[in-house]
Every structure is written in C-alpha cells, then in structure tokens.
Length: 185
Figure (tube, rainbow, N blue to C red):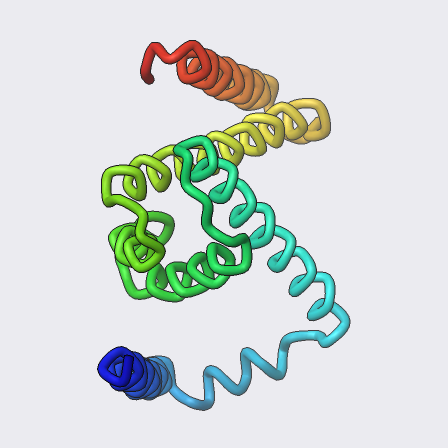
C-alpha cells in the first residue's frame, strides 16, 4: 500500500511540475501583456452563464459516457467519469485534434477502474460517435435556421444552406438508425 501511495504522490508532483511548465510556456509564447489584455476585456457578467453552460455540457457528456459504459456492463461512478473527462479535456488542448487527443488517456484511466481495454475503447468510440452526432444535429438545425432568418443572403446561398442542413440531419438519422439496428455505420 505504501508503494501505491508513493506512486500516486510522484504522479501528482510530476503533473504539477508539468502543468507549471506548460503554463510558463504559454505565457512565454503568448506574452503576458496579451494575456492580461484578454482578461481585462472579459466582462464579469458573462462569467456565470459561461461557467454554467460549460458545467452543464461536461455533466451531460459524463452522464452519456456513464450510460454507454453501463450498456457494456461496466459500472463506474459518475463523479469518477466526470473527473476523467476534465483531465482528458485538458490533455486534448495539447494535441492537434482537440476532440480526440486524450482518448488513449481515457483507456488508461478506465484501466484503473479494472475495465478491459476492449470495453474502454468501445465505450470511447461510441461516446464520441454519439457526441459528434449531436453536434452535427445542432449544426444541421442551425443551417436550417439561417435559411429561414437570413433574408440578406442571396437565395442560392440560402438554398445551399437549407440543403446542407437537411442532408446533415438525414445522414445522422440514417447512421443512428443503422447503429440501433446493429448494422454498423
């Protein structure tokens, strides 16, 4: 047990040192003046709605992942998954592919919960598929809303936006239907 405590302490120390180094690098690259001017330009009245929306999205995404894992027959506490999602979110900022960069780390984190790698990987792929599908639905609906609300755009552009929005919604519906029917996507 002492070996595990030392290992955890070492991991925490390495994480803190790594985090400080990344922060220092960002400050050096961006410049302290640019960072301070960006913060000064931010209105505090938007902070609470922004934090509430962000927290809501993280809670929903963590719950979605929990449901996917339960479908695989795996039980992991919600708050553990929430914590894992926050860790992976921060790692994804360091990778070129923001939405997918920390996924291998998710597999490692789930391994600490005694989840087989195959089930971890399957849950991550399915969770991302569902999440990106939801993003596509929102995007398709927004394209349709732009069609109906943008009278200043030329009709040809509006028609293209409408067609793209409907096409996205149909494609997502067909992929979800194939997934539900277990035919693969």
